[in-house]
Image 1: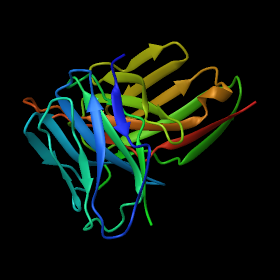
Image 2: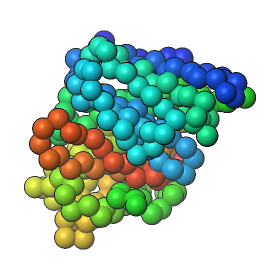
Image 3: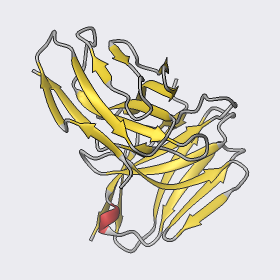
Image 4: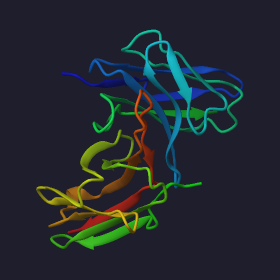
Length: 112
Length: 115
């Protein structure tokens, strides 16, 4: 079955450490996205990539980094520069305009 | 600057009645609108969408209405069922050509359907 896989589902990180969240899709979608969900804040765009080896900052990119070396993969690194990293992170992909997104099941990151 | 607004954080309705979730937007360039449903600790799932050239789209119990002059859309669920209890996100996009495509989401409305 085609879909998006995010791993791990739960992740704990010590303050000051970088951590990478995985996102893999087998839908053959060109575009991929990372969103963050906080209570009362909805979904906020961190980074997105429309094509391999290219990506753009979203609304809240500070403290995050991404890479897009393969069409299927769009990992997100939460760096120690991110002041409030504890959140629910969602990865999505899209065929393009007017197709909407397909979301992964999310990763809950907790900084301890 | 919030371009997509869902002003009701929560809504409670009785099973069998109509649920109406509202969404307002400020960007007149938005031309495609979607509703997503989300359960806790899961990714959102697509529910229904509407293009700006239409004013209504229906899919089973779900109907989305778009009023472009008022920059307002609404999702109607009839009849509401307890399994509809979830957070509903309104989303919009403004496609300007090329490869730049992304959705802007509202903050969501928590719908509770009581048996």
